[in-house]
Image 1 (cartoon, rainbow, N blue to C red):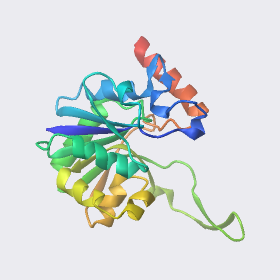
Image 2 (image 1 turned 90 degrees about the horizontal axis):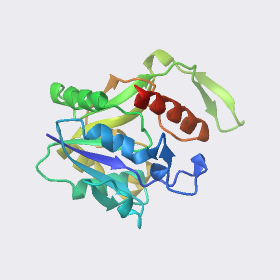
Image 3 (image 1 turned 180 degrees about the vertical axis):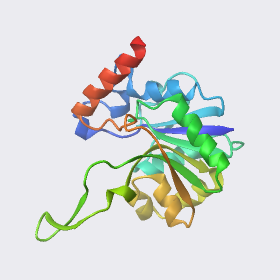
Length: 224
């Protein structure tokens, strides 16, 4: 069985909202509630813990455990994991900003971890754009064009064996602050991580344009 942690403590400045991003309405409900609703349809998930901004724990949907998030993403994950039931050996970590996640994607991630011998599995989509690496000086001077056939854009959910995630989150504060995802911390701790293919529709809502697209796609889902 699994416990699910939702990271929802970000301020979301790039979205241009006066409220925390996870609480911004999307297609008729707060962004956070889309991920909670999807997780509630996953039989393997026994508990949902949400990391929210301080002072906004009452905004959590009914039936979930709410904790105060930390100053960095990984510290929010650590706070949520500490509040999770100790009996669950699989931990699902998901960003509330990926509101288009489906129950099927959560289930597939859990199955992939159980099937594999790795410490973590990560949803990801193959990169379709050409990616160029640049130097800082002279500014924006191209130094290499990367082989996109070997590049994947990482998403959430990311699913972990609990012991591996706990070891990774025990890293020093400066390493936690540098992490953009928890799988990287597992890699830094010597753990093994595998990817599995997910749809590009599972995108992260970051800008106003992303929000408009999410409204369109989620509204279409609601209409069937």
